[in-house]
Image 1: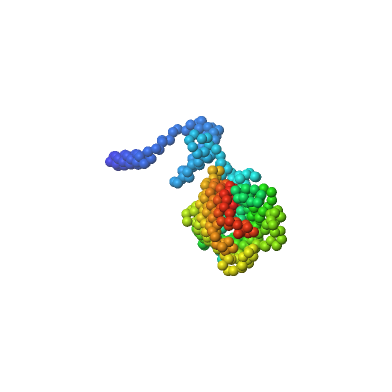
Image 2: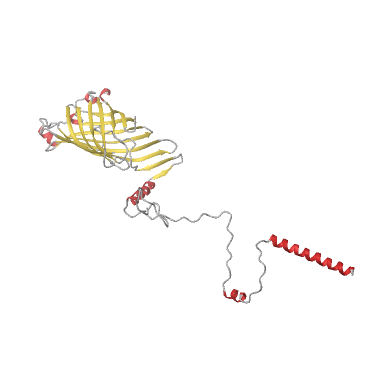
Length: 379
């Protein structure tokens, strides 16, 4: 009897222990759901429905969501959005339209690259550069440019004359040094200066030269060879008393020039010329007569001026040995339009006053003083 009682107590203890274990397991899984009785319709539903899609786990550092492409908006408030060619919304950038400004600019850049080459000492050589390192001063009458002047200078036919200049400077080769702000360039220029009466050609001076120019920061300069020959018009020869034995005028010079910008828009300069070949009517070929000097200053905006333009002023003083070193003064003032990125990119309208000996070779012994109105193309 005692053994049966002991066996019952052992069974009771085991039942209680099993219950405690089940309760602990249930506490460890709070979301666990007790099994439900089998449903006869579950197998049929799983056979007919698609399998359940299990979502993929989210990474710890997810990528940012894609941004919505929005076209650029015009500056200002309330402007509608617009698409620009510079920053297309979709796809690669579109090529410029043939004949457009952007297309011409790209073609110009490609053409420039075709005329450039590098050197082993770290310099770039450019053939036919599109700018000048030494720009001819505005008030120097003998420098190459396209110019027209209507003056009140009297002549043997009337009370006024017309002075013209037809010429320009062409760059041949430029060397740019990469490690220094220094460039040098070989140029060539040609010029024809004429004085016209209402009926005929009175004087004509022909000039050409081969200067080597340089630029270093605010400084610029030149050194080169210049030739000048002067002639008298046929009608003026016939109108004179002596129609035979007209002496010729010719000069071959070595010219040196130095200039500097004191401020961004104010330039001062000086030139010196020595004539190693010298043929002037009525003058003895002496060293004291072979030299000439120029000094001057000019003020204008060097940046692109746009449609409005900008005022300018220029002055030049010249001393020539073949004129006894009597100073010749040239004063100019007017309005100019400038685009320094292209050839002949400056147009001027101005008034000029000149006082001194005649600037024409066959008339150098005559003193003149006249005022004029004109226009010109420079650079």
